[in-house]
Length: 235
Image (cartoon, rainbow, N blue to C red; front, side, top):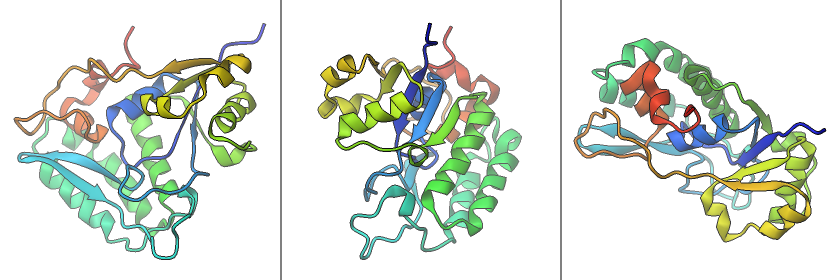
């Protein structure tokens, strides 16, 4: 009998929020979908951290001119000074957080490693790997470019799941706007939807709580207890 295998497929994001890592932690293989078009002003190259005055954006500068239809994996960084800028912002915002000192060096090393990295996808991958390690998530991370790609949004996802040996596909809720659910049924692949509701609050550096900030906020504030505020570690 074929062993059940759950797969998720998402575009790479920069230091994503906890929900992104929950999807990673809830599947057996997480495929970084970087063969698709890069979108400006999205989560690919930016995310939010918390300050005492509320959320603050951290953005990696990416070349856009003449590259309207570039794929995510082709997106290149145009100014590496973002490394120092982002790290200074993290230090300033989280220096007094309960567990900043415990994890600061590990995160700083990733930033240093990105100082000479030109491609956004590879930068995102470095952070995903390190943050998964901190959280204790051992899901296999792979790239869509490692597989052959079919035509059509839904058919392409089904093809990726099949090639990965998956029997179940876990999707984010936003995909309900375009996924053809009947095609998953025809392919005998179970389609599940991620539920982002019901997250408990945790300690933050601001009085106004925000859920949709980088998972680094949760790690620096709750440390080893971060999993208590996520779904992939629920019994």
